[in-house]
Amino acid sequence: MKTVIYRGFHSIEFQNLFNQCWDNESLLIAAPPYLEEIGFFTDKLPKGTIELVGNWEQELSFPEPTGEFSKFPQLGVFTTGTTRDKPNLVLFTKENIESSIRGILSFFENIQIDSIYCYPQPYHIFGLSLGYALSKLMGLELVYTTGVYRRDSHKSWCQASRHRDNLITMGTPTHFKDLTNYIEESGDAFHETKSSIAGGAKVSLASWDLMKNKLKIEFPSTGYGCTEAAPGVSHTSPGIRPKGDSDIGFPLPEVQLNPISGEGLEFSGPNLCLAIINENSISFPKRFTIPDQIDVEEDGSLKYIRRINLVLNRGGEKFSIEDIENRIREKFGIEVVGFSCPDTRLGEDLALAFLKSELDQSTKISDIYSFLEVQFGRSFNSKNNLLLDEIPVNHNSKFDRKACAKKLSERQHGL
Image (cartoon, rainbow, N blue to C red):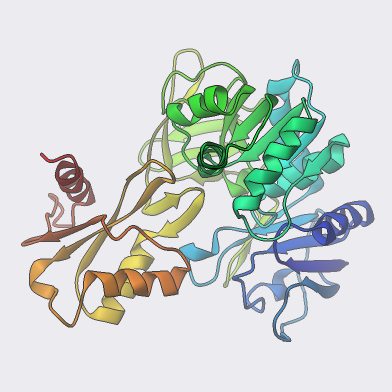
């Protein structure tokens, strides 16, 4: 079996490669640009040859594939690589992708769609399933800007909206907010479009209103899911305003859900990924638990309560808070507690609590945030920090992140 590993951004090359691999039944793995090592997973791939395509800056050596699979894996995508040194690689069959798309499209039965504008990059399952695969399966035109996400992406959307009435836009809440800011600043003309799906991060009611009222999208919607679900678990009804920030709609028709108290939301179904590969092993899950507390309402709709594990979802990009803490401790030798705080653009952003006694002239907050920017390639808001005489702890004698978040909120609101 042939495996093709592509490293890069949106491009005509990748779209053609996607279609070729889909037709020829070659395994296509979409690698993000920051992935520099592949040896930790290649030996677990299906037996056969490996071809590297795209932007590989150096020649790589890696173990030959020796994996045995009962089903043919068609696509591979990585969980966000900033959550750990070596991200998980998730493999999907065509059935996984088709089932998720089929379930999501069941919410759009009476809405005509002729073309797709895709913001998420192809190395995210959101952009892969609801961009490239949806375009391939439904014969829809796929519109995107090549290369990295930038201001030209919004200019391209405005142009697409002026020429395509039945356009559906795929993006995270951050993309839609940035698009609105671009239009307000530039005055670029745009026309009403048919629909949209906001996903990849928590979608607030304000984000839905922005899509409907500011961007003139006739039937906006929001999706909830995860990489392992290819990516759909639930969806809101297009054009119908959600009940609140926590409304994540109804389960996809073929998805079976089981909320587990204290552990998260367990799901299974034909959209569940074929395999998950990490540095040490490969697993073939029959069910998967998303670490989110989800409540089921009387009408069968789902309500998002909170994230159970310590992961910061920053505009759809996930960061391990513990990893951030550990890197700061190792570099500066100081105690730090990380937590999330609300952010109007990204949904949530990183906040940090420090002990006043451990910060002096040799260790400045600006130095810490500069270090994080180098480590993660992201500029976190340095205003989201607390200097405390004592970091609060809970009844288990563990640092109380909720108490830290409350203190920061009180300070920001002048309380």
